[in-house]
Image (cartoon, rainbow, N blue to C red; front, side):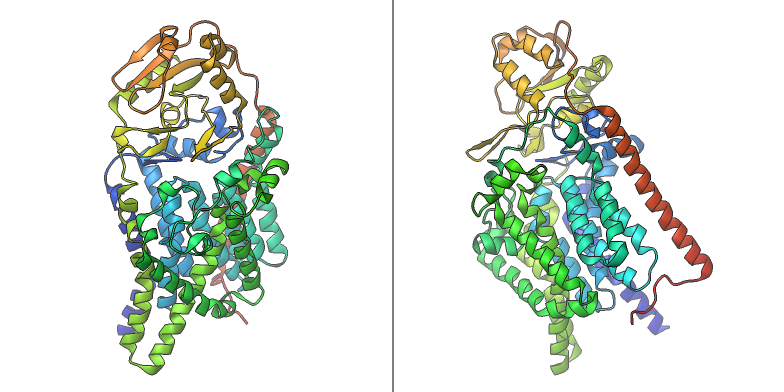
Length: 573
């Protein structure tokens, strides 16, 4: 009985530790409301508009994530959907990294889980709102684990890996991360099956991007604007090697600038170096070199934007290379290698201590290694020090949404001031991508010209550029009608210029202290740009069937193994 109780405690330790890390980060989610920060726009009920399927006038940057959210928030309350996703990101990332090291000891698993879930990459990407990228980040260690179990004879691993790549493909960058990792850690025929399925799952954004002849190519100036930046005393290279260096300095946690935090971070980097050799025994001789090369590619891509103009040339001349502008996101590959090696390095140090001292000092060493990431980045706690606290939308916005949904009739909406990002007092003046189009659930033309520091990055949506030109013209209403715009909303509690003369030419439909809704008079011309709908819908249906097939495959394999009494794996030889 004592042995069984001990076994049960060990079995539950890793999930409990991962749950504790998640709770410390996401305690603010106990409050009602919605998290709004930079690109993270959470709304009560997201609608399935043409842009969500890649049928908008610009490049499909939010495909298929917006379509998936429209489906999920149509089934469950939006607040619940986003909470499940955000909690699942941290818990899934931590647990996945720990489970890759099954059999290596609780100490190694705990350290790997902590390093992978509690670092500058996670903190900075949460604040900048790249939650779909972090969904892929959370899936990466599970892809490694599936490959490891496949080598041990687990027939469930292949359909599971395909499903994980599909989950990662909510965003184009996430899909590339997952396909790249699968290609590195899987072997044999299964590798090509996973890669082929993963590439097929990119079709929902690849097809509209290829067919949209109107969209402008990415501005090559973005390569420099989105290049990695030093965010610690270690300089650019040191910042990147400690999983930081995001281009937007406003999202960097304050603790990254502390010397003490730098020393603690370097300590678990040293642990990773000590454990790198042991990772080969854990994952196999062929896997670790491939994973190391992939991690090195991630580091090179992170640094490429800051080193010369080669990346700018690539973005300008190679289709799809715009995904490489923010190269720091590809540090996710390096994070996998780093976390697993750090866990094994801590176990190696613990074993060394255990041989020369009592058991307690060894436990203390591994325990200290487990809390090093927390001490190095304390302001990841409580929603990155309160920067991710939920807020409620103003009651006025609900009235504006109802006015639009009852009268909109398929004509597009623009929101003034016509600029991408907002700063509302009810959101503690945090920068956020304008949430009203998604909140209203109607087709909208969103400006995509960005200002990053002193650089102005040209947008890619010709319709948005047409609207921008119309707003500067002597007769703006005519230009708006020609761009297919029939509705104008005005947000009054955010910085930016709104031409009062334009509003006098519009028909007021709804008015409140914080937001107004106007109708553009006259006949609005339907916008004819964008990709053809037929091929896009066909590839969307194909990818849905592929995901359903992989899920059914997994269920069938599990059922057959359950009936035959197979344990799922065979011992590695």
